[in-house]
Image (cartoon, rainbow, N blue to C red; front, side):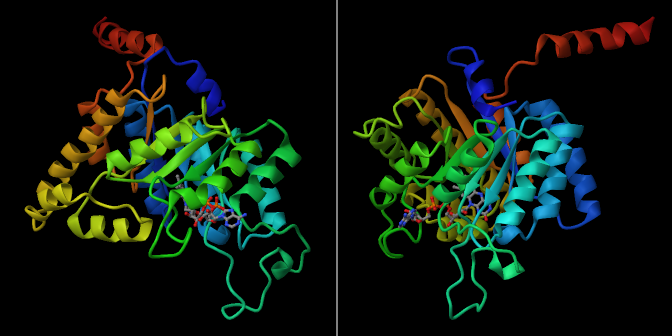
Length: 335
Ligand code: FAD
């Protein structure tokens, strides 16, 4: 089903969460991830899961394979990411058709890596690279428009937003969410149903960003679902790398807390769970929207996100059916 329908069906004040996974490289990796996904789905009950897409279509087959496992085998509402630059129109068409066949109703429409510059490649980025002519996709908005034109309302479409500005937005040394704003408005006007944000660790910056969107004169964000993106902290080195790559700043007090324990990954994870849980509690208490959800960049890992969800009471109660199943089990066995 569509994410927007599932969100609309939640009880007032009931929080939700989504979990993001990337396709493993090997078949053994797939087997391991499938087992882990099964466990996580049962224990954590995400409202939906996301499957990432390798820029330029580099993981096309594997992303679809993982999406099929999630949607069909595990019966999880799945959101397939799809990038549009360095991708032929034919690949986009095939992917959307394949997604439909699997039963997927949700797409996160992204730009992906910027188109290669002339110096780097002789092949144009508009699909002619494969000998097929095609439409040119320069920005995510082009993909949103294309999906709406071609598939109407069949897909629920999400788009990305950057609380601290996109890293290459204005100029590298001056990221600015104000620079991105007109383009984000365009994406929503073109038909996006929800926004999912880049990861962040500075909750004050996130809250300011959300407030800015809600109050924007365009009015397009007033009632739009905005899902903050969070990444559990796995190690000190990784945090530094991720922060640099994503342009997400780490407030000094948080950085110091982690630096104090940086040699010990288990301790870093534990402090990281505290940090991300505090971010969630702050967003919850700010009550900026009636329904509040959180997206987790899991990196295919299970532990830290499970602790965070548990700590923050983000795991929904099992549906009635499951409760009966669990109660029935031992009685039937004992008979
Ligand atoms: P856009 O919305 O097109 O914006 C990109 C930049 O261009 C912004 O700086 C924007 O301000 C600017 N811009 C937009 N329109 C115009 C215009 N008309 N004129 C001038 N400038 C403009 N990448 C992957 O490869 N695979 C994934 O699975 C993936 N998943 C992601 C999930 C989330 C939640 C997020 C936040 C990002 C994800 N990314 C993924 C990364 C994403 O592809 C990159 O951040 C990419 O560089 C930008 O994508 P976008 O969709 O935000 O682009």
